[in-house]
Length: 173
Length: 71
Figure 1 (cartoon, chains in turn cyan, brown):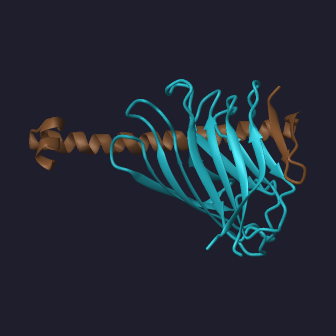
Figure 2 (tube, chains in turn blue, brown; figure 1 turned 120 degrees about the horizontal axis):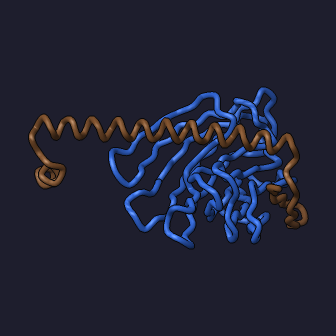
Figure 3 (cartoon, one colour; figure 1 turned 45 degrees about the horizontal axis):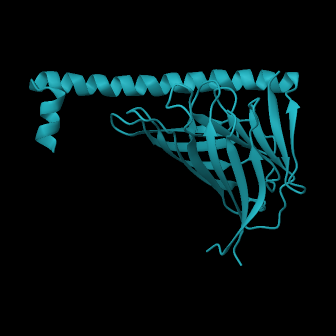
């Protein structure tokens, strides 16, 4: 049971927008990592893609459950994805000045085993259409390693100004 | 030129740097993958809506009447 949350680093997108937010040189001194995100896209898209240690090969596995505001919630999975992915970015066609939000929880990130990740997120829209998504993820590269960097990518283009990401380290004692 | 934010977790410093040609190519590939994923999602939703509409048609009910029955 985690009993400490320590803010490691903060990212705030400036007026020019940004294609990604990359946390680098993450210390290995915690048990788990948590990223809290508030995001809006400057271009399109509602997904955020997450990659570790610059790994872009098909070593990510995801199972997603999502609802869109209408119809029956549905699920899909991908056993050879190039990133973890989850809806949590409000797109430009949604209500102005609103931001999606979500969090990424990574257990035992400094271990030499595959990394389990749970992600949840919602987009924000004052209308029927809006996403709520849960993702169970796994990062399992050929050579296991501690996570030392996390890349957050706005899948439809750039993050809009004022999007933020906060990286926390959590210790189990 | 698109940029990315790099946050050094040792110093807390955030710097904005331009994407390399390789990163731009990767970004374009990611965008294509995203569009394919979105298309698949939209197709799933359209299929669900069609099934629902077909069932309602067979039952001779409107959507509001079906909701009233299930409420």
